[in-house]
Length: 265
View 1 (cartoon, rainbow, N blue to C red):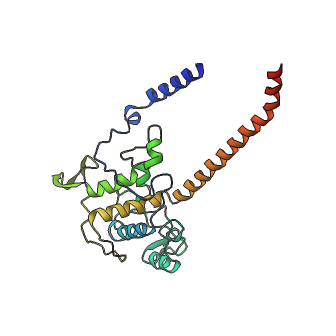
View 2: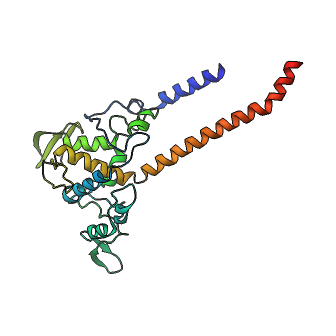
View 3: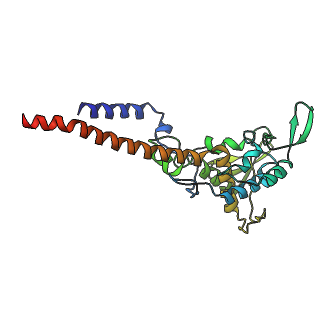
């Protein structure tokens, strides 16, 4: 009983110690939609075709302003990623230029090189966005929502891209656009429109489809080993369960003679 009271007191102290916005993950300023992604849940995995479509949207729409400086081109061929064939990966990297310190000049990128960094001041690097942004389930709380749904970053990215209301406001020489997911005015104009890209796999390039695809791809850039970690965790749980069962049976067998002798006495 004392142990239970101690646990309750410790949990209460932890909750009270958190700031108000951290203790209540539901307090999100904007409106974030709960989209379903294939990589969510205990056994979720990345959809290779979706990651390839998301890479295409990033390359054709986002790369003109935003960077992915923490992502190497060679990882586009990794298992549980976009899985581009080696020749396609090299051809894709060749479309970018990187600064070579030895040559003191620009050259076409190769597999070991990283995507260029953001080209404009204030344009965030997108490989970190899904980790930095908390959506409907947030990074706080007891962790159940995060375990089942993820931290909400992909939902925030997709909701942001789809969240423009069409309202515009000209302030201090700049145009601002209202975004429901952000819950305020933003300087970035809407970037996705139906059929602005052509998907070779036949998928219809609607605004929502492109938003979901690029959000999934950006999640992979932030969590490239997500599937491997889930697999390792699943194996670890099975191993610990078997070990616990063996320890229980061993304990029963070791103490059985003692208990039997105690009953006779």
